[in-house]
Length: 154
Length: 154
Length: 79
Length: 79
Image (tube, rainbow over all chains, first blue to last red; front, side, top):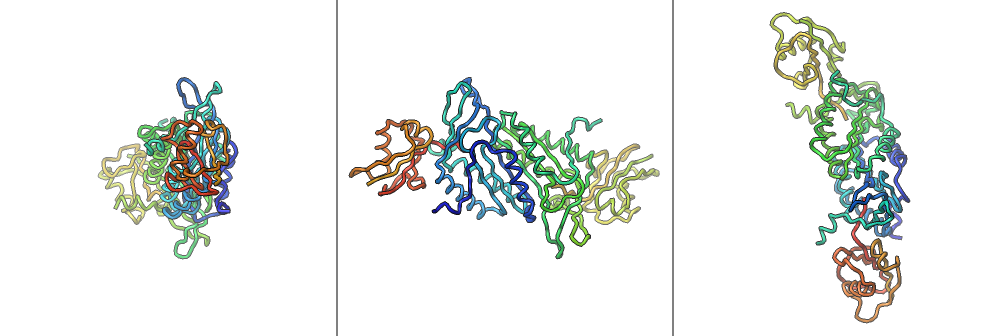
């Protein structure tokens, strides 16, 4: 029951441009907003040892991830001048070129929206238990690591 | 003929969420991109001396504005790791809650996209000849000023 | 010598026009002199915040030449 | 005492399961001891990058109690 106030974070598969457009449209009634900052993570066709990534298969410790993202949002609201903040991440397979992360912050002024967006992005990368399997064209794979975190621990 | 290589910047009226979605979708074939940063300026219902802004009527010295934005893009490409950069601004009347500025930067990594987006935003505010008339509910108006600039000059 | 002059925003409102062609007399060909000439002609206010672009480049000194395009720009408001 | 254990990502792959219930014997109730027990049980590699969450909070020390949910988390890859 601890989760009842957390917002829905996970989306099955890629995040569509239409979902992003709908989110933008739904903020047009909030006329105290002057600035939106959006970050999109897109799956990159990295070349690893001669093989090209064709998709990432995401999984997560969902209950903990939702709690962590709830904490990240609360911290952003306390630190920045912020009207709204939304965070979505994909689960399952996301092909190269598709969007897997959508962070959307809104504020009366640009500083609040921009600073909050970047702050949330760094926190999502370092403190949310999301895991990713990089699938190569030849059906082999490797587990993705956000390098910052590994470095921080060692 | 100096303008022939500059990209189209100005949009008549508000920038629609669909235009933003189309821009995002058109980058899904660029699989070297890992990060998109988007800034949206939205017209705010500011309260000035008891009157509420209901729209901004934008005009510009278009030829010069396009050249300035071309320079801003070139500078961003030379300063940051950047795959794409798009900048759109409204002309004419944009109602409160609607989007008047759309900056869209893409990079293999988040730092390039985020830094370029913020850099372009500051440059657009301070060096592009765009003018705005804030229209109030009672048909009166005032000329908008980006305060930073006025302050820098005095 | 003929100069194409453009006015924007609140300045266009004050001059009552978006552009005009002005024939310069002897002795008014420095940028600062030309600004003073236009300000006096239209009784413009707020000189501290106006910027001048000569051929689409911001300029506060130098000479104005035949065929130049001179624009009077109030404070920017983009974004 | 029964502990609910969850495995994620590369660790789930190594253990061959996403979760299980483990009955702890006397003497294995400290977090570090429990980690060592699971690593030995499954011959897990890469201890340096694994994080443990007890009841969804990252923890590297303290006691594990009856009914706790203990998760083994490989490096994060969100974004």
